[in-house]
Length: 321
Image 1 (cartoon, rainbow, N blue to C red):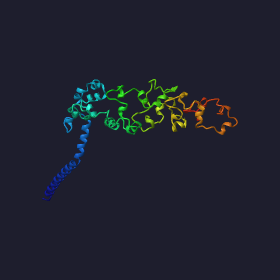
Image 2 (cartoon, rainbow, N blue to C red):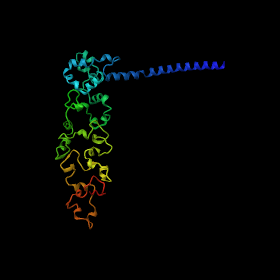
Image 3 (spheres, helix red, strand yellow):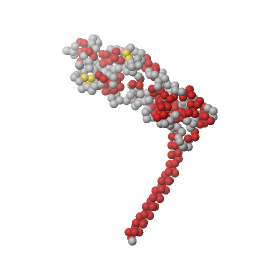
Image 4 (spheres, rainbow, N blue to C red):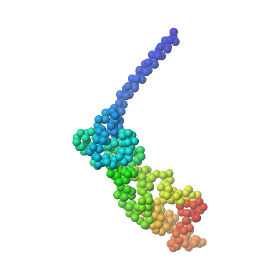
């Protein structure tokens, strides 16, 4: 008898616990429902018209936009954004994904104040719209030199009138970069330069315009010199005897990466002068038994005539061959 009563009471306790759980869940949903509504509103504002929802009626669809903007829509089918929409059965990126809901704009007879216009938007507004999709690919843009200079995505890219199908650039490299970096353009006019003007290289081979954690938006690599050594493989190493400057100052300690009036893109025209910036002349140069050509005042022979393996050596600590 006692066992039967205990089972009945245990069943009643389970029912009470279930009822309490339902009540708690209902109260939690009531508390977070405003947040959920806000998230839905944000999602609806950034995506094409959903099948059902609070903001569905505010969207008119890309076909309606084409009726008036046929000149823009004419070549848009080959645009990467349009192709993305087709991959999702026409429900991907459309006109209203970037320009906002178009119903008010259409109902007003084309009132430009009732649609998002990038030509009138601030750099921050433009970047926020683009990064709502591209933040994963360009997470560092806002802290980059271009972001801090308040450049917008449309400073380099044009969705509708791009000159380069790849990346939708408004001009090809390096002319696009020269618009702001005129000083670098002068460097590429030097007698010795990397082959950027000849179109054998691009600025983006070394720099990431959307930002990195390195200075000058340099591509980030495990080895700071890897940007250079991926082409100049003979200097990559590893070497038994390393030139310390390569680890401390990097390639740019001796070389000007864009261009120079000196062979091998050196900072100075006399290699001995370059070496003596670190290897200052000492009393040892005047001791007996030291050949006269080590006297740097006479400058008979370049240091690299003997110290040929200046980037590193596997045989000599003084970088002899």
